Length: 175
Image (cartoon, rainbow, N blue to C red):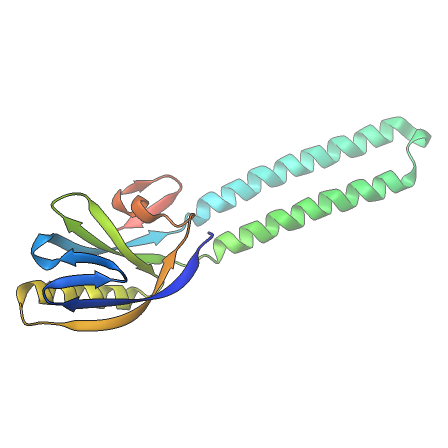
């Protein structure tokens, strides 16, 4: 997953929720909740097996072709083919390891009269849940104000609005 980390301040001041430079008036907030993005590790394993089988079949086809050529194919071709197949397997293994080590990402969801918004995303589940409780308390208590600095995850490959549905292609969202 390609993403970047930034530090943002989440605060309630003057009956407004601030997440970085985004403002949500507390009286417009219908619901605040957290959602978890759980990477699809079984899908990564299935993809690895499919690509490994294709690589093995391609490599086997290459070795059979070289064997059919007999003495016309130098021995270096066998070594090159073996190195290419081994390199592809290594890349597939690295991709699988990276997918299996991906951590859950938790989103702070702010729902207004319009559509829900992913206000921020973090690897820290407790911090997101703490923010949900603080925001709900601020909605119930007009005098409540707070400010906390959190690490926000963002990027072009982060799910963002895909947290909104229960059925995300290839991933599981837990509410």
